Image 1 (cartoon, helix red, strand yellow):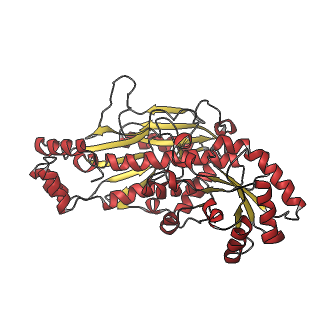
Image 2: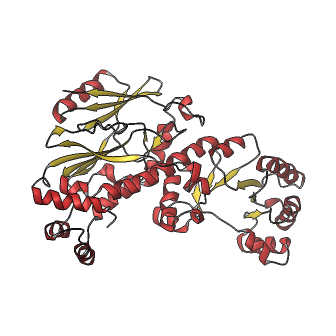
Image 3: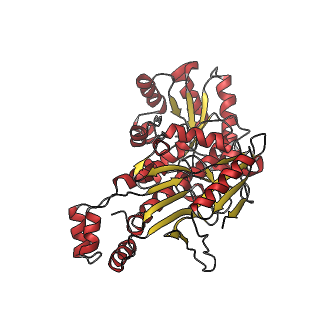
Length: 433
């Protein structure tokens, strides 16, 4: 039921007119990157494959569709026995992408592929947007860890998906326990201002936290006065205090002041955690400050951190015949495609190459290009074959996280800039007759 109504109206009509069994190829891509972005991040593929694997409609849902005139008896019969039996190829989760990169290709009958459009796009658009913004924050942090803490700024289930996407992008941990349990992500979190306000005074609150969690805990020091808060934290925990957290104010100035005060108090090993509406630009602005850990929430899940990825799901081939839109500003490129990426001998990527054409001649051309250029590699892999997930479709979140880290290191340095500019790599189309 994670489906738009128009998918069901198309299904019903196609089943009636005999086109439902046409062999179709749908492709997921974006026409342009969000404003200011130099690359996209493929995230959510694992969740998409889970959704395809379990996609179905139960008896109560089918009855609702019939009662409300969404489908007729023929479509209801088809949906009652639905199981995806086609193929899915795509970029592995954790890859980067650019305008017109064919990041997911779905092959099957029109009937079985059209009903997947909404669920595929809702997952990929959300997770790819989160991961791209989070990856920029990781780059800006220059190796310092970031904690994802955006759960209270988004839908409760979106928070779990966002935590997964941020971890894939390189975040160190999440505050969301459901994400930790479901996806094996390290979790972190100590106390809010409410805990300090609960107690008669700040030293009492700090002592309570330390008694339960040890001196290695993180104490939130900005409930009242930060300077006094740091003094109270050091007095309560001694030189073994793990960290202090500052959640408001001019974070760069306060971090310098806090470092000096902690060092003077003998807390030279105490780390400084900062949080409070941090995005990639704020994190980059703190690069010269003595900050050890960042906490990012709102910008991870909404606003500047997660503009839409702009992904679309478009029909590009019917019964081996390329089809394409020609409407202004929404042109598509017909035929199934294969994606390659060229690299210098040093390993730096230079361009994305998208090869389109009939499968047989296209694959021959791809094999020739790979043989002729040792720096060229194929990006897309088989994820589902005849309805069954392949080993490529069962990689772990940790594998995807490592892939993204490795891939980003191949991008030219200007492609990692936070300023506006061209995509990190140009895309070149090669059409095979």
